[in-house]
Length: 382
Length: 239
Image (tube, rainbow over all chains, first blue to last red):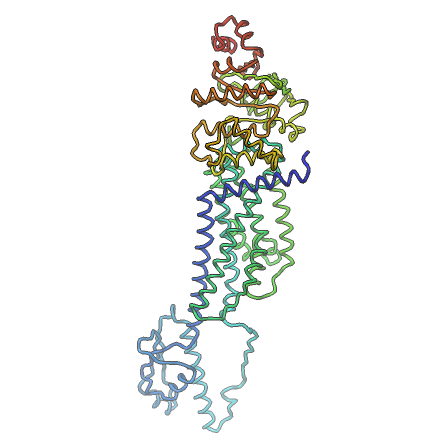
C-alpha cells in the first residue's frame, strides 16, 4: 500500500508531466487559445450591436412627412416629442391635402404610415402611439367644445405603473445573459477536446500509458493527475474567454457610447468560481469517454458528442417542468452566473445540490477509469 | 528471484499461454526465446503485473504483483515491446518523471539521472525532446527510463530489435555490466547470436508452453545441434 503523501506526490508528478505535454502541444494550444478568444469577441460584438440597434430603434427617429403643411398642429405635437424630419427616411407619414378641411367638417381624414415593418416595426409602433395620442387630444377638444363632459370620451383611465427600475439595455442583458453564459461555458469544451483525447486515447495509441502503469503507483493517482491537468486546461480556456469577453465589453461600451450595461469586474471572478465545478465535471466525463477509445481518431468520435451534450441539457431545461429543471446539468450554474451578470440574486441552493451530484459523478468516473486502465491500455496495444 | 509457475491466459477462444513456468535470479541473464505469437509478451505482461493470468502465480522476490503491486513494481525495471516515449518531453524530463514515480527526489534523483546518462552515453541528447528521435536514441531513452531507479530486476522485451551493430554491442556490454553488479535480467529476443553471447540460461516458449529451460550449451548438447539457432528450431518443432 502507498501512503497518502506518496500518492499525492505521484498524482502531482503525473499532473506536471501532463501539463508539460499539453502546453507544448501546438494543436491543443491553438485550439484553446483561438476558440477561447474568438468566440467571446464574436459573441459580445453581436450582443452589443443588437442591444444598440434596439436602443436606437425605440428612440424617435427621423421620418419623412409628406403633406406636413396641411396639419400644423400634428407637426407641432411630433416636434414636441422629439421627432425630426428627413426626406431619405424609410418611415413615411403621408397627410392628405384636405386634412384640415375634413377635421373641421367632423369627417375623419386618413393618415398613412408607409414603412418596411420587418425592419422598422418598433419605430412605426412608436409613431402610431403618438398619432393615437394626438387623435385623443383632438377628440377631447371636440367633446369639450360641444359642451359635453370629458368623461364621455374617456369613461375610465388606464394607468400603467412600471416597476422595472432598470434600463431597456439591462432588461435585454437579463434576457441574453443565460445565452451569453452558455456560449462562454462551451469554450472550455473545445480546449478540453484535444487535451482529453491526447492524454488518454492518444497516449494509448503511442504506447505511453504502459510505462506509467509499470510504475509503483496506484492507478487512481494516474487518473487523478490527468484529470487535474484537464481541469487546468479547461479553466485556462475559460479564463481567456471571460477575460476576452470583459475586454470586449469595456471597448464596446466606449465605442457605442453607452453606460447602460453595467457589469462589474468582480462578476468575472464569480463567473470563474461558479463555472469551476462544471469544468471539473466536463473534464472527468470527457476523459472517461476518451479513455475508452483505442486511438486519437476514435476518441474524437466519442468526445465529439460533448460539443452538443451541454447544449442538449440546456435546451432540455426549457421544455421540462420547472421542478425537474433544477436537476438538469449545466442549467443551474447558467442561471446562477446569468443572475450575477444581470445583478440579481442567484439561485444558490439548487446549485449547491448540483455541485454535490457533480462531485459524486467525478469520483465515480475517476474510480472507474483507475479500475479499467490496465485493461484499456492492453486493449490499445494489442 | 522472479518466478512464474503454471501460467495460463486466454483471450476469448485464443489460448495465448497454457503452461508457462520459469524464473531468473539476481546476477544472471535469462533469454526468453520463442517465435512470433508464442506467448513471450503475454508472459512478460503477466510477470510485470499488467495482465492477470487465468491460472498460475507470479512471485517477485516473494511478493505477489497482483496482491502487492506497489512493492513488487519497485523491484522491476521494464523495457516494453513498444518504447512509448512522450514526444514533447526531453530525455531528462523522462528520467525525472519516472524517477519521481519511483519515489526518488532531490539529490538522489539527480545522481541517478547522471549515472544513467553516463551508462547509456546519452549526454548529447539529454536535453532534447524525444520527438524525431532515431530508433537507437528511442531505445536508449526507454532503457534509461527502465533503469533510472536502479531496479533489482530488468525485464526487456526484444531490446535489440532494429538496432545497428554498434548499438547492439553497446547494449550487450551494458547488460553484462548490470548483471555483474547484481541485477537480474530477463530479455526476449529472436537474435540467436545475441542470446548465445549474453544469456546464462534460456527459456524456450512454443505454443504457449515452456519447452526448455537450461544453459545455451546444455540446449545445444541435448538437441545434438551445431548451433543455438538449430537447437531452438528443433525444440520448437520446426526442424
